[in-house]
Every structure is written in C-alpha cells, then in structure tokens.
Length: 266
Ligand SMILES: C[S@@+](CC[C@H](N)C(=O)[O-])C[C@H]1O[C@@H](n2cnc3c(N)ncnc32)[C@H](O)[C@@H]1O
Image 1 (cartoon, rainbow, N blue to C red):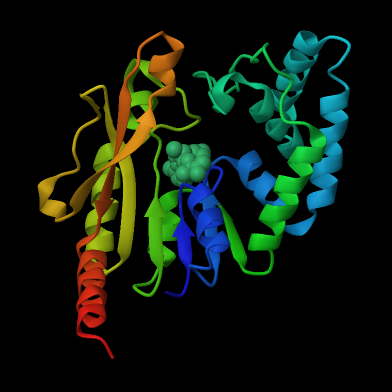
Image 2: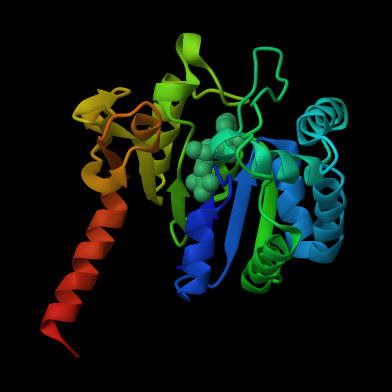
C-alpha cells in the first residue's frame, strides 16, 4: 500500500491507529471543515504553539466556565480559530461537533467537566505529531477531490457524516451527505479499481439508521459490534450499537489473494 487516505478525516482515529501499528507508510487526511484541518496542520507543523493556545483558553475558564465557553464559541463563529475549536471540542457535550443551519457552532458545554487538562492534551498532540509528521499530506476540501486523486495502490477509508444525524430535519454536521452523489462517487471509484472501506450508519438496539448502500456497487457489508450506545445510555436505555463496514470489491479480492498466499505458504 502506498498511502492510507482518509477523505472524511475528523479526528483521524483510523490513521492514528494504523500509524501506531505500523500498517501504512504515509497518510492523506482530508476534511471540508477548515478549522479542523487547521488543527491537523498545527499538530503536524507546530504542535507546541497549538498546545500553548489551548492552555491559555483552558486556564482562562476558571473564573466563570459557562461564560467563558460561550465567549470562546462566539469568537470561534467569527474567526474559526483552530485552537478555539480544539477547546470547544474538549468542553462540549459528547465532544461532538454540531452546527446550526447558519453554519454556526452551537453545541452546548458539558457542565460536569472542564475538558482535558492541558498537560494531557500536550501528550496526545505530541504523540499524534510523532506518528504523522513528515509523512502526512493534508487536504481542506471535499472528499470527491481526494477520491479523484487516489490510486489503486492506496487504501481509502471513508467515514462520512452519518445519515441518521446529518440529513433531513436533524442536520447537525457542518455539512450533510448527499447520498446520490456519494453513490456516484463510489461507482467511479469502483471503475477506477480503488480499494476502499466505508463506515456507514448501522443499527442501535436492532433499529437500522440510514439506508443500505445499493447492491449494484458490489460492496460487501460486515456488521461490527461497537459496544453500548452512549446516546441510549444518556436517556437511560441499555442498547448495543452495530456499525456497518462496507468493503470495495477490488479490496476484497486483494484480501482474498493475500489469504490464499498465506494458506499456501512460501
Ligand atoms: C463521521 S465524521 C469522521 C470521524 C472520523 N472517522 C474520526 O476518526 O473522528 C465525518 C467528517 O466528515 C467531514 N465532512 C463532512 N462532509 C464532508 C465532505 N463533503 N468532504 C469532506 N469531509 C466532509 C466532517 O467535517 C467530519 O469531520
């Protein structure tokens, strides 16, 4: 594999895990949320400046945490400063980015905690820097641009905004997913022989969220148990989450031939 490409990177959990496990030589992280890509740029180019800015925001909250959170949120909605987004993510409910229809960050603060301490954040940021610096390319923009640049030698992992929370009346991400266009992009990716994986909706307590991806894409679906639903726990229910992982046909056949070679031996 040449590169692990994450066109919907968010906090890039898969790239970090792959880097930690030595599974990929280089990485491409893309996201259409500019200040989020700004956080990644700082982690890679100047992690200590990001940590200093976070520490200043974190320490300034002590006199009046509620008012401080609202002031940082208001400033972020004007200047989109990456360190402010990092602070908001550390302090907001469930660490989940949420935007209103006007595109303003509107997630409330979690008043039970003050957010990860600066020393801890610094350890995490430095570790992410060690794992990714010097071998990661960043891209601010639409996933379609990264798919168009990916080659059959890459592995592309896609984790688009969940339809269950990103479309219709319940839009919460800064950008929802246009499913028809996504399906067209996947057809194109198949035609070009791209090897890709998609995390896509799933079910909670047996109720499915979002539609299945169309059968004519030839993807294989694996249902992955993802533990207790934190959303259900919050409202006093105990339910299991199952996430769907779709595997592209080209990837599945290269995995099959690797498994056959392993079975035959050297
Ligand atoms: C479900 S989250 C990804 C979570 C990620 N797997 C992680 O480890 O945190 C989806 C991400 O896609 C981004 N996004 C939404 N629409 C996009 C688009 N059209 N192109 C690129 N990124 C997009 C969002 O900003 C968000 O960070």
